[in-house]
Image (cartoon, rainbow over all chains, first blue to last red; front, side, top):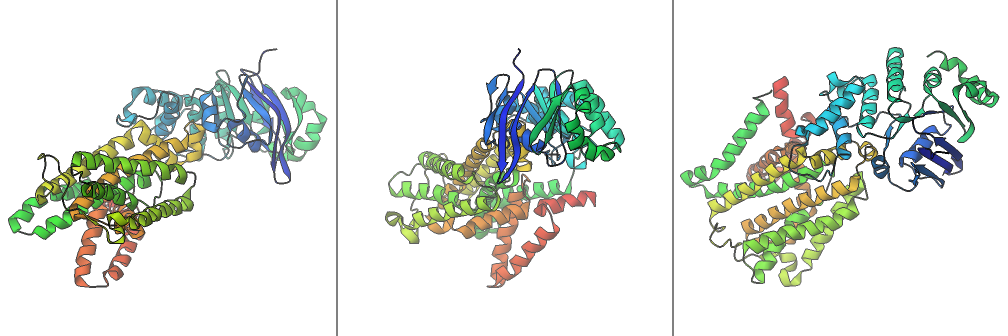
Amino acid sequence: MAEPLLRVEKLVRRFGGIIATDNVSLDVAAGELHAIIGPNGAGKTTLISQLTGHLAPNSGSVSLGGRDITHLPAYRRCALGLARSFQITSLLFDFTAADNVALAAQAHAGTSFRFFANARKEKGLRDAAHAALDRVGLLHRADVVVSRLSHGERRELELAVALASKPKLLLLDEPMAGLGVTESQRMVKLLQELRKEVSIVLVEHDMPAVFALADRITVLVYGRVIASGDPAAIRGNDDVKRAYLGDQHVVTHHV
Amino acid sequence: MKAFTVSKAVTALMLAGLVLLPLYSQASGNIFILTLFTRVVILALAAASLNLIMGYGGMMSFGHAAYLGIGGYAVGILAQEGVGSGFIQFPVAIAASALYALVIGALSLRTRGVYFIMITLAFAQMAYYVASGLARYGGDDGLTVYKRSDFSGLINLGNRVQFYYLCLACLFGVIFLIWRIVNSRFGLVVQGLRSNEQRMQAIGFPAKRYQLVCFVISGMMCGLAGALLANNTDFISPAAMYWTRSGDLMVMVILGGMGALFGPVMGAVVYLLLEEFLSQITEYWALIMGPLLLLIVLFGRGGIMGLLGRFNRG
């Protein structure tokens, strides 16, 4: 069997008495879009944070392309090809959209201990930034300061920043959070395009979007994996229906 | 795009004033004003170095005066030990500052926010007490520098005008360097870290490394200011690194405009001139100065530079 791109084994994370990640194991194959769903408080963001290195697990391991990255800091994982977007938009708000993306490109284009040349005039970085902005349809807003962008545009910019680091694996933490109907549809379309180029782990509440996009779905409840499989299998799974879709059915179908 | 702005015009006027000041001083025979402005220029240099970490880097150092002392003592101690050459004194002043910055930066940058302010303050106070304990070099009373740094006839620091222009050249040189640095790859990373450290880590930047280097660069620049200061007063004492002096530098930066290239120069000019003139009017000049600073900071976000910037939109 081919080595999966991302392998998570028996990951455990406790906060005091609460087990936020309870013995989670999952594999993400190269080229796959793997969705992680679960009700609020299921530990999805906690899991993502352990994958990106923002949070250390109590036990278990994470490996990327066969290399153990459990104890690497966030910036090292990024260098190995792991990029993330944040559930709550996290950008450089006083920088322009292009600057945000160019910095991500800069992180992967040689050393940043250069003190004299004007980085905003480096053609390679600017071109990479513009290409990534174009990819998400934000090129016309390149020189706008982030604090003046709309919420939807910021979500797209998060994606452009992640793309600019040319990742092998993209971890998207609720990219659709807070988006309106048309914005959501645009985002789904965008993700459908992107998945052809890069493997994606998608954490999302928007059920129609998840079922439209995912190759495989892992369902998390109280930090534990209760089911994992293709969308059809998850749709038919009784545990999942009871634990998750049952409660949230009404809500998700409003979207 | 925007060729003319009020803040640019005022900055240009101020710089022209600084360059032409010795001419006025000589024409009018007012020597005092040259002495005053030499101090202004040196402290502007110190404030500019603080602006690099505080305004651009978001590192609120409350111990920046330590470098003034270290730079000053490097000159004073070497002079007393018979090493009078500025070509040795100045590099030693800068190197000692770099070393101090490296050590306290590595320790302080483990903390954030208020703790960072407190720990930089604590280190500077330690430096203050160490200097007070240097019995051989005057201890509490300080150390008189009997002979100014000797630059082998290249420039005579004993000459007021030459010394003033040396200080001004150092100020302009440092501001030029800061301008290049903040627009470089390195500078963008440091400013990105000020804006959002979590995001910068996520796109692959190890935060502390960049902040530490920035902290050291700033310390070296301020060490240069310290070396000049000891030459200006022919004297160095622990008071140069007392915490109120660190506070003065912070006020200059905030008053002028944090993260504005010429903000600290503006801040230093306004702050020190106000101090000078108000103290001539009344003994209780701080009572007038305090509310005045408060008003500028309250109504002028971004300090004086921020206020001036508003004229264009108004």
